[in-house]
Image (cartoon, rainbow, N blue to C red; front, side):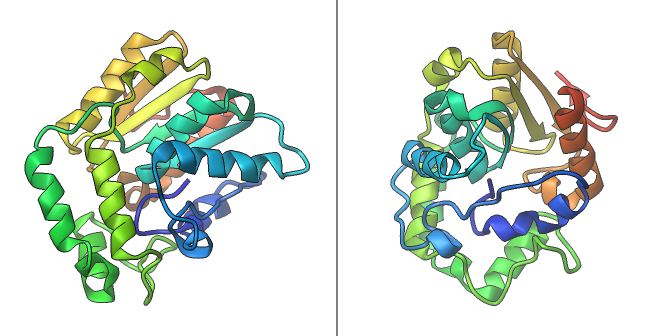
Length: 237
């Protein structure tokens, strides 16, 4: 499941480097082909993904990968629909309200219209460290509107899921970039140390590490699919 300001197509390069893997990469509510479905909250987005999975002819429990927006959604999918999730690899999210949300909220409101414009989207992706043409590269059209971006920020900044995490009976692997905000890094430690079904680790870089460090992210997904391990390059908790 993709991050904000992207669609499921962003995973194309990752999937191409995972031979033998059949991947379902849906556009989450508010994005791409699901733009007409409003993003209400992460729980309802998880319910939307669950409906898509149940419509598959082989809707057995599946391993789930989620990044940023997809991390919040994946966590709620595991909490609300454990029969559909065999295990989850999630990165770039936090399970408690963000420190500093009092100023990050107004900032997100101010910049959300800009982040739908090609020039500013390219600058934002470059600030994450992304260069060259990849499936993560922003296209000429925004995959969502400013209202959706504001809604993501509002939901993420105030997200509280510590109680849900305690009830999740699905194995979780939780990751973060070493340079991500403190609450995201702390979430890795809280989940990995608080559940016998969880492990976690830290990758070099910041929030954009899955896109910037392509080879490491592919190796991480491959190792996790094979035996739920973490590859060299990921510092375990």
